[in-house]
Image 1 (tube, rainbow, N blue to C red):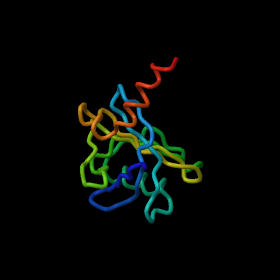
Image 2: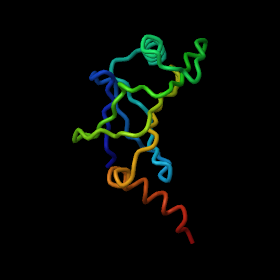
Image 3: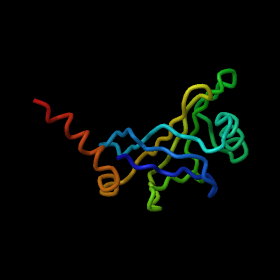
Image 4: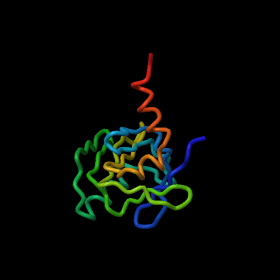
Length: 129
């Protein structure tokens, strides 16, 4: 059973993610975003980033594809209200495909406690006969 994480921006719930993927040694968790009432995530994040002086790493208006630098007011919390904090986060995606959220530099031992399945998956990569 995977956990569902809430994604809020300035205290407003904008979506959820299972943070189903990880780079365990780097303390990175990422996953697809299921948006909550946002018709065009591209327009939403582009406007937010422009209004809040947040740099875009890529912006392709013709494809409605965007990638942001870290958004400080973007918070990711577990179902029991614990914030998943790292050194930064990033939103990447395209309107007619999917969007992903990445959280970088999640410290240990918190990473191990919150994502034991990712640690196990990583360790299993080296234990194959």
